[in-house]
Amino acid sequence: MSKPHYQANLNAHLADCELNYLRLRKLLPDKLNAGQQLCIGVGSHALHIDVRECAPYTSFLEVSLAQAKTQGWSAMRLQLRIYHDAKLAEVTGSRQVYALRQRYDYPNKQMFHRDEKAQLNRFLGEWLSQCLAHGHRSDITVTPSLDPTGTN
Image (tube, rainbow, N blue to C red; front, side, top):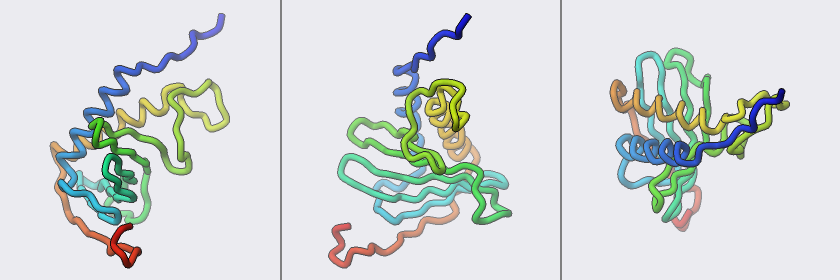
């Protein structure tokens, strides 16, 4: 007897992405610029947010979770795409995986769960909720643009 085929729940996925967008908007500055960095401390951990790209309707962020005592080491690294017009924030990649699929066959070579992307979006939501409830923003820095014209 084979297991039933995994079916992604689009309504739940969009709800998670919408809530993550709302949580991020509370944590991030109103105006995002490429090169901006933000650190939010929660207990002995820190959530680092790097703004990689900004466009009128989308932004690309890299979020890493690190233990404060071991700077440089991160237990989790996520790539996020923020869709400002749709008001959604979605995990698009993780560590060396630059394009997560909505579902995976199981078992697979990478040993991803069938709903890996959904789990990472929920994980992000939990950490953003912890940051909102118990975190403190420790610093915001803006890295100068590499483009001398200022157009990025």
